[in-house]
Amino acid sequence: MASAAKFARLGANEALHRSLSVCTLPLPTASAGQGEEGDLARRRFQKGQIIFSESRQVWLGRYREDVIRDGKVIRTRPQVVLGTKRELPTQRLAARKLDEILPRINASTYEPSRTATVAEFAERWRREVLAQRKPSTVRAAKSHLDRHIIPQLEKLRLDQIGPENQQIFINQLVGNSKNGA
Image (cartoon, rainbow, N blue to C red; front, side, top):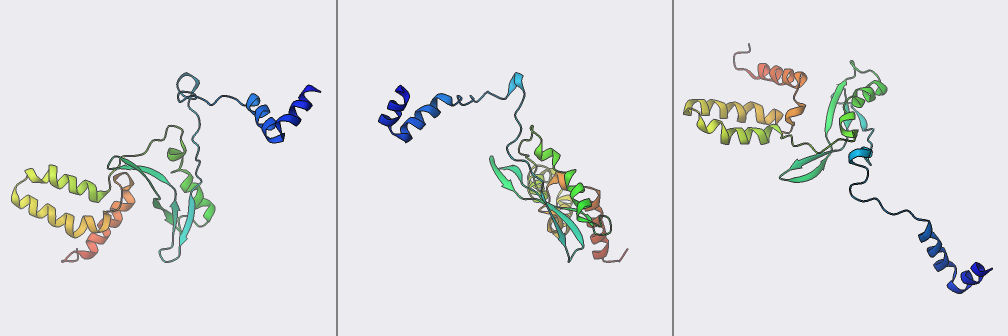
């Protein structure tokens, strides 16, 4: 009976607030969930997005990834080629291919990567390595970078360059060669 009189005096909202404050748990500290007890799962779990490019006849996969640039964490949305329509005839098979990429990002130990793009690496390589070479070597290397490598590969991250990208790059070079060999 005393609680009913108290409820009437305080008003419904205030009484509800006081009763909820008694029932709430304290917020975890910054160290909770880490260390001896183990890490908590990431808040964001991604399935990614599958897109079919009609013009190129390839399956593309998109996901979000944090990257460190100039000391700041930036969220990017990379798009990777999963395979051709011939290699992966259905969207479900393309999704399986994307599932091979996403565990690294969905892992509880995931941290933003510091991987540079080809253009960023080439600029750094010019300053630090190429500056110490002979003038004739510098001219040839700058020509290769400016005419072939940077225009085709500048936006790729170094960890994205694999055998497929390398073969495509070589095939395009052979097509552009002067003597056709």
